[in-house]
Image (tube, rainbow, N blue to C red; front, side, top):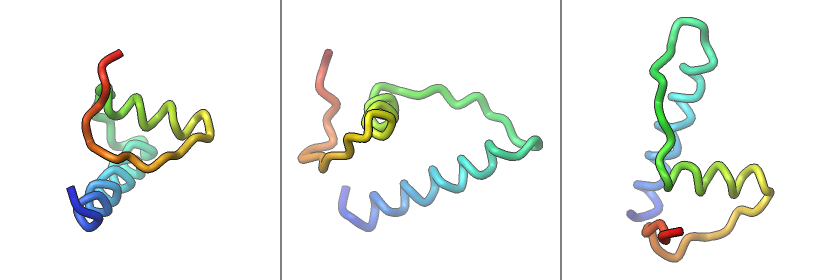
Length: 58
């Protein structure tokens, strides 16, 4: 993905998060391995630039 595409995906996720914060919206979105990697990076304070969009196997 290019920068513009990443920004569009990020914008979509931000809007989904805002919807989830309301009492009227609930979708039960499960996180996948890529999402969990991002969650773990944010929670640990470690934000790094991805050199590829492939999630390494654990």
